Image (cartoon, rainbow, N blue to C red; front, side, top):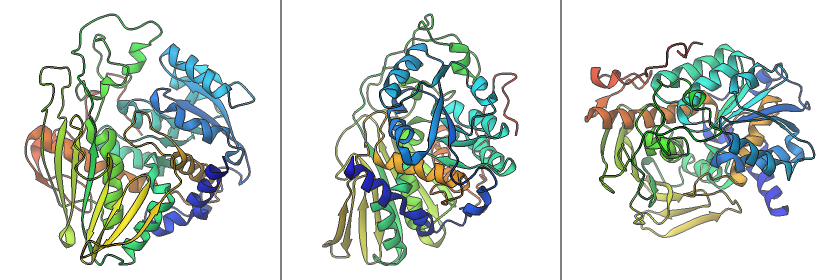
Length: 446
């Protein structure tokens, strides 16, 4: 715990991480002070109690967080019960459990919603919470499509609330350190970044119509998505691969993190052009309906480029780690992941490095660890006006847009040009995928 507390203290850096990021999007802390007092306890609700829930135990239990966990919300009874047991081992009080996120949001005493629901619920649930006056920590991907991406930013501004995406490496001390060095020119002009993710996911069951599992509110799980009959094994993680109604494929599932670091390192916003080469290549006859390998390329002004190399089901270690980002500059290069960075000169000689004390998970399902804790503490302190957000939603949504461009280019099977100022696409076919079809009555309104 001593090491963990030291790490958290160093990671937060008194809000200095945002000063390093160079983001013009970060709002000054004083603008949040009218929301809540600097030392007030925050009443928190967590919606979505799946594999990610373990990452929230430390942030809820640490004294310095100064929060009270009021609700544990999930549409699956067994997940509510399991989460309650885990949190009760660390808390000296008992949170309430709730099936319906709408009831949680309607509770006026709730200050914060942590939104860890499936992808198709991220923006709709977050916008509901913002309209009800809550601050929101929304896990990646913060949106299911580009229309939602824009509306979430608009809602955060309209309702003047704090929204941070769970791109937690923005609160990683060693990552902040190396990004600062890159921006200071330690590897010359940074011109290219390769963001990667490598995993050996197995075969996915083919969907079969069946009754929903006991304890699952299937109608509410679908929420904003068009209604259909339940198919076996959908609700528990495999929704990621069962079509586009719910998930955002591997680019949204994991690429969000690495492309965000790449964009941060190069200091770029929207790209000028996006194209992909992607296909389903492993387990050809299983239930996986999307690509399982993707090579996406994004071109930016000033001849900068970002490549995303995502391999979901081939575990060959191409880059020396399961996930990370390599940044190339005119005078050197950098390798950075969740645990370390290594800096090299132009000849390939290592000139500096930093191996972090963090325990943040890499490719394991769910993840969580010290960096997530630091990221959430930054969020809580931003609400109180003590810090600036490390990942404000108006900046994080630009990284999220790259995910959507990659998926759209795959789905229309061609690249397209992009307005670097607005993020809009110059392609009629791709624009057909800008939004989504909602279940009647669930249309997104801000």
